[in-house]
Length: 251
Image (cartoon, rainbow, N blue to C red; front, side, top):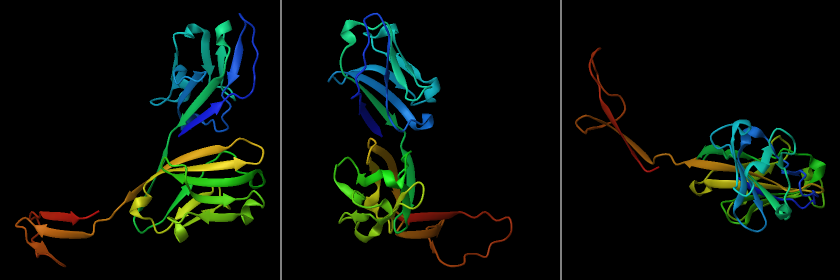
Protein backbone atom coordinates (compact mmCIF):
# COMPACT_ATOMS: atom_id res chain seq x y z
CA UNK A 1 0.00 0.00 0.00
CA UNK A 2 1.33 3.45 -0.89
CA UNK A 3 0.21 6.21 1.43
CA UNK A 4 1.46 9.68 0.54
CA UNK A 5 1.20 12.34 3.19
CA UNK A 6 1.84 16.04 2.64
CA UNK A 7 3.09 18.25 5.44
CA UNK A 8 0.34 20.86 5.36
CA UNK A 9 1.54 22.24 8.70
CA UNK A 10 4.27 24.84 8.69
CA UNK A 11 7.51 24.51 10.59
CA UNK A 12 10.16 27.15 11.14
CA UNK A 13 13.90 26.87 11.54
CA UNK A 14 16.91 29.15 11.54
CA UNK A 15 19.93 28.68 9.31
CA UNK A 16 22.49 26.77 11.34
CA UNK A 17 19.85 25.39 13.71
CA UNK A 18 17.86 22.15 13.61
CA UNK A 19 14.29 21.10 12.79
CA UNK A 20 12.25 17.89 13.10
CA UNK A 21 9.65 17.29 10.37
CA UNK A 22 6.94 14.76 11.37
CA UNK A 23 5.61 11.98 9.14
CA UNK A 24 2.07 12.22 10.47
CA UNK A 25 0.66 8.93 9.25
CA UNK A 26 -2.13 7.69 11.52
CA UNK A 27 -1.17 4.02 10.99
CA UNK A 28 2.39 3.49 12.22
CA UNK A 29 2.88 -0.18 13.10
CA UNK A 30 6.51 -1.24 12.65
CA UNK A 31 5.76 -4.76 11.38
CA UNK A 32 3.44 -3.41 8.66
CA UNK A 33 5.83 -0.89 7.12
CA UNK A 34 8.21 -1.81 4.30
CA UNK A 35 9.47 1.55 3.02
CA UNK A 36 9.48 5.25 4.00
CA UNK A 37 10.49 7.87 1.43
CA UNK A 38 10.82 11.64 1.82
CA UNK A 39 10.56 14.07 -1.11
CA UNK A 40 11.08 17.82 -1.32
CA UNK A 41 9.19 20.07 -3.72
CA UNK A 42 7.34 18.71 -6.74
CA UNK A 43 10.09 16.38 -7.99
CA UNK A 44 9.77 12.63 -7.70
CA UNK A 45 13.39 12.29 -6.59
CA UNK A 46 13.76 10.91 -3.04
CA UNK A 47 15.83 12.91 -0.59
CA UNK A 48 15.72 10.27 2.17
CA UNK A 49 14.81 6.57 2.28
CA UNK A 50 14.22 4.09 5.10
CA UNK A 51 14.18 0.61 3.56
CA UNK A 52 12.60 -2.13 5.72
CA UNK A 53 11.65 -4.51 2.91
CA UNK A 54 14.04 -7.18 4.21
CA UNK A 55 14.25 -6.26 7.89
CA UNK A 56 12.39 -4.71 10.78
CA UNK A 57 11.94 -0.96 10.57
CA UNK A 58 14.08 -0.38 13.67
CA UNK A 59 17.00 -2.21 11.99
CA UNK A 60 16.40 -0.87 8.49
CA UNK A 61 18.86 0.87 6.19
CA UNK A 62 18.57 4.66 6.09
CA UNK A 63 19.81 6.32 2.90
CA UNK A 64 20.03 10.13 2.66
CA UNK A 65 20.54 11.84 -0.68
CA UNK A 66 23.87 13.48 -1.48
CA UNK A 67 22.38 16.92 -0.87
CA UNK A 68 21.42 15.97 2.69
CA UNK A 69 24.46 13.83 3.42
CA UNK A 70 25.16 13.58 7.12
CA UNK A 71 22.78 16.41 8.01
CA UNK A 72 19.67 14.21 8.14
CA UNK A 73 18.45 11.28 10.20
CA UNK A 74 14.97 9.79 10.64
CA UNK A 75 13.85 8.75 14.11
CA UNK A 76 11.36 5.87 13.71
CA UNK A 77 11.22 5.15 17.46
CA UNK A 78 8.96 8.12 18.25
CA UNK A 79 5.36 8.96 17.34
CA UNK A 80 5.04 10.67 15.01
CA UNK A 81 8.34 9.57 13.41
CA UNK A 82 10.44 12.57 12.38
CA UNK A 83 13.07 13.58 9.86
CA UNK A 84 15.65 15.70 11.69
CA UNK A 85 17.79 18.19 9.74
CA UNK A 86 20.88 19.72 11.38
CA UNK A 87 22.35 22.13 10.54
CA UNK A 88 19.54 23.73 8.55
CA UNK A 89 20.60 25.44 5.30
CA UNK A 90 18.81 28.24 3.49
CA UNK A 91 18.10 25.95 0.53
CA UNK A 92 16.23 23.48 2.80
CA UNK A 93 13.14 25.70 2.66
CA UNK A 94 10.16 24.22 0.81
CA UNK A 95 7.42 21.57 0.86
CA UNK A 96 8.29 18.10 2.19
CA UNK A 97 6.29 14.97 1.50
CA UNK A 98 6.51 11.68 3.40
CA UNK A 99 5.43 8.46 1.68
CA UNK A 100 4.86 5.22 3.63
CA UNK A 101 4.59 1.83 1.89
CA UNK A 102 2.85 -0.95 3.83
CA UNK A 103 3.17 -4.69 3.47
CA UNK A 104 0.14 -6.28 1.79
CA UNK A 105 -1.86 -8.91 3.69
CA UNK A 106 -2.94 -11.84 1.52
CA UNK A 107 -6.16 -13.84 1.76
CA UNK A 108 -7.24 -16.97 -0.08
CA UNK A 109 -10.61 -18.27 -1.21
CA UNK A 110 -12.00 -20.94 -3.50
CA UNK A 111 -14.44 -20.31 -6.31
CA UNK A 112 -17.93 -20.87 -4.95
CA UNK A 113 -16.84 -20.34 -1.34
CA UNK A 114 -16.79 -17.23 0.82
CA UNK A 115 -14.15 -14.86 2.15
CA UNK A 116 -14.09 -11.98 4.65
CA UNK A 117 -11.69 -9.14 3.80
CA UNK A 118 -10.78 -6.98 6.83
CA UNK A 119 -10.60 -3.21 6.85
CA UNK A 120 -7.77 -3.04 9.41
CA UNK A 121 -7.87 0.65 10.12
CA UNK A 122 -6.18 1.49 13.40
CA UNK A 123 -9.00 3.80 14.48
CA UNK A 124 -12.54 2.36 14.32
CA UNK A 125 -14.95 4.41 16.43
CA UNK A 126 -18.47 4.35 15.00
CA UNK A 127 -19.36 7.94 15.88
CA UNK A 128 -16.21 9.27 14.17
CA UNK A 129 -16.70 7.57 10.78
CA UNK A 130 -18.66 9.18 7.97
CA UNK A 131 -17.87 7.02 4.93
CA UNK A 132 -16.27 3.66 4.07
CA UNK A 133 -15.41 2.86 0.45
CA UNK A 134 -13.92 -0.31 -1.05
CA UNK A 135 -12.02 -0.33 -4.35
CA UNK A 136 -10.54 -3.19 -6.39
CA UNK A 137 -7.42 -2.87 -8.52
CA UNK A 138 -6.00 0.48 -9.55
CA UNK A 139 -9.27 2.07 -10.66
CA UNK A 140 -10.87 4.82 -8.63
CA UNK A 141 -14.32 3.30 -9.09
CA UNK A 142 -15.95 2.17 -5.80
CA UNK A 143 -17.17 -1.43 -5.60
CA UNK A 144 -18.85 -0.98 -2.19
CA UNK A 145 -19.88 2.03 -0.10
CA UNK A 146 -21.08 2.44 3.48
CA UNK A 147 -22.45 5.97 3.81
CA UNK A 148 -22.82 7.25 7.37
CA UNK A 149 -22.60 10.98 6.61
CA UNK A 150 -26.16 11.55 7.80
CA UNK A 151 -26.61 8.63 10.22
CA UNK A 152 -24.80 6.33 12.62
CA UNK A 153 -22.58 3.73 10.99
CA UNK A 154 -24.72 0.86 12.29
CA UNK A 155 -27.77 2.37 10.52
CA UNK A 156 -25.94 3.55 7.43
CA UNK A 157 -26.79 2.85 3.82
CA UNK A 158 -24.71 0.10 2.18
CA UNK A 159 -24.37 0.33 -1.60
CA UNK A 160 -22.66 -2.50 -3.55
CA UNK A 161 -21.65 -2.02 -7.17
CA UNK A 162 -23.52 -3.83 -9.94
CA UNK A 163 -20.67 -6.33 -10.32
CA UNK A 164 -20.96 -7.38 -6.68
CA UNK A 165 -24.73 -7.15 -6.42
CA UNK A 166 -26.09 -9.38 -3.67
CA UNK A 167 -22.80 -11.23 -3.22
CA UNK A 168 -21.29 -8.67 -0.85
CA UNK A 169 -22.08 -7.27 2.58
CA UNK A 170 -19.96 -5.32 5.05
CA UNK A 171 -20.14 -6.21 8.73
CA UNK A 172 -19.36 -3.06 10.72
CA UNK A 173 -20.30 -4.67 14.05
CA UNK A 174 -17.05 -6.67 14.35
CA UNK A 175 -13.40 -5.64 14.80
CA UNK A 176 -11.86 -5.42 12.35
CA UNK A 177 -14.90 -4.70 10.14
CA UNK A 178 -15.02 -7.01 7.13
CA UNK A 179 -16.33 -7.13 3.58
CA UNK A 180 -17.81 -10.59 3.00
CA UNK A 181 -18.01 -12.01 -0.52
CA UNK A 182 -20.19 -15.08 -1.20
CA UNK A 183 -20.04 -16.88 -3.53
CA UNK A 184 -16.50 -16.02 -4.60
CA UNK A 185 -15.93 -15.77 -8.37
CA UNK A 186 -12.68 -16.28 -10.25
CA UNK A 187 -12.68 -12.62 -11.32
CA UNK A 188 -12.74 -11.50 -7.66
CA UNK A 189 -8.98 -12.05 -7.42
CA UNK A 190 -6.87 -8.92 -7.02
CA UNK A 191 -5.95 -6.02 -4.74
CA UNK A 192 -8.65 -4.47 -2.56
CA UNK A 193 -8.38 -1.09 -0.86
CA UNK A 194 -10.55 0.02 2.04
CA UNK A 195 -10.84 3.78 2.52
CA UNK A 196 -12.24 5.22 5.76
CA UNK A 197 -13.31 8.88 5.93
CA UNK A 198 -13.54 10.37 9.40
CA UNK A 199 -15.62 13.34 10.45
CA UNK A 200 -12.66 15.17 12.02
CA UNK A 201 -9.55 13.07 11.24
CA UNK A 202 -7.60 12.39 8.06
CA UNK A 203 -8.65 9.58 5.73
CA UNK A 204 -7.09 6.14 6.21
CA UNK A 205 -6.46 3.44 3.61
CA UNK A 206 -5.84 -0.28 4.05
CA UNK A 207 -4.81 -2.74 1.32
CA UNK A 208 -5.32 -6.50 1.06
CA UNK A 209 -4.78 -9.00 -1.76
CA UNK A 210 -7.19 -11.83 -2.54
CA UNK A 211 -5.98 -15.01 -4.25
CA UNK A 212 -8.78 -17.12 -5.74
CA UNK A 213 -8.28 -20.85 -6.26
CA UNK A 214 -10.19 -22.46 -9.11
CA UNK A 215 -10.77 -26.18 -8.39
CA UNK A 216 -10.27 -28.65 -11.24
CA UNK A 217 -13.35 -29.47 -13.30
CA UNK A 218 -12.38 -33.14 -13.63
CA UNK A 219 -9.94 -35.49 -11.90
CA UNK A 220 -8.99 -38.85 -13.45
CA UNK A 221 -7.01 -41.60 -11.70
CA UNK A 222 -5.04 -44.04 -13.89
CA UNK A 223 -2.66 -46.95 -13.36
CA UNK A 224 0.84 -47.08 -14.87
CA UNK A 225 -0.59 -48.63 -18.05
CA UNK A 226 -2.92 -45.67 -18.61
CA UNK A 227 -6.10 -47.51 -17.64
CA UNK A 228 -8.69 -45.31 -15.97
CA UNK A 229 -9.58 -46.48 -12.48
CA UNK A 230 -12.97 -46.14 -10.80
CA UNK A 231 -14.31 -47.00 -7.38
CA UNK A 232 -12.28 -49.73 -5.60
CA UNK A 233 -8.96 -50.88 -7.08
CA UNK A 234 -7.04 -54.05 -6.37
CA UNK A 235 -6.74 -56.45 -4.74
CA UNK A 236 -3.04 -56.04 -3.93
CA UNK A 237 -0.85 -58.17 -1.70
CA UNK A 238 0.88 -56.63 1.30
CA UNK A 239 4.28 -55.35 0.21
CA UNK A 240 3.30 -54.88 -3.44
CA UNK A 241 4.37 -51.70 -5.22
CA UNK A 242 1.50 -49.40 -6.28
CA UNK A 243 1.78 -46.44 -8.66
CA UNK A 244 -1.20 -44.26 -9.51
CA UNK A 245 -1.37 -41.30 -11.91
CA UNK A 246 -3.63 -38.34 -11.15
CA UNK A 247 -4.71 -36.09 -14.04
CA UNK A 248 -6.58 -32.87 -13.29
CA UNK A 249 -8.38 -30.84 -15.97
CA UNK A 250 -9.35 -27.21 -15.61
CA UNK A 251 -8.74 -25.05 -12.56
